[in-house]
Amino acid sequence: MKELADKIALVTGAGSGIGRATAQALAGAGATVVATDCDAGAAAETAAIIQAGGLTAYGIEMDVSKPPQVRQVASQVLATLGCPGVLVNNAGISVGGLFLDSSEEAWDRIISINLMGVVHCCRAFLPAMVEQARPAHIVNVSSLLGFTGMRGVSAYCTTKFGVLGFSESLR
Image (cartoon, rainbow, N blue to C red; front, side, top):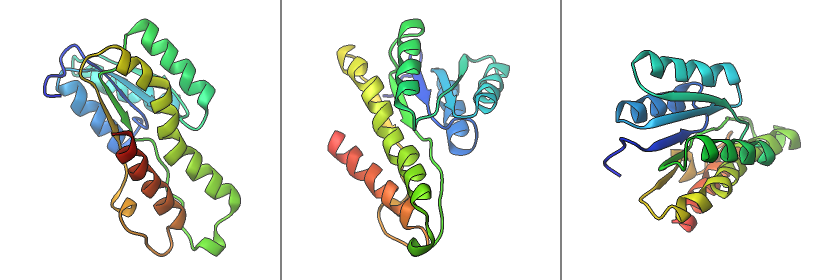
């Protein structure tokens, strides 16, 4: 997709880092950006930074690990702004530590955000993206650690391998 003017781009994990930079780049390329983050203040801050440049952005709180909240945000965006032409599934966390030292809760949390968050967002937005019958893109952010395992980050690597496999299957 070379032309982003008049397109809606939704970015998860847009409250900081790669997500914020991606949201800014998409806005700079002409997209109306929906910056989502589990931290409402961070999402609003990203939107404000974009708006300060004279561009259009909205900040919305969304925890990708909570399917009902993802569906509610999708419903809100589809009803008020329209269907995204770009969905960037960027939200993620890191959990380090050797496998035997990693708690079940830490594994559940990282899987629910890094892997299932991507699935939840695709489930919520992809039907409308297909239905609109216009070019659209889904970008699922993984990592180099989605290609190779590494000692001390087994949970993180597992989720990023999953995102890569899901992305290839979805394509």
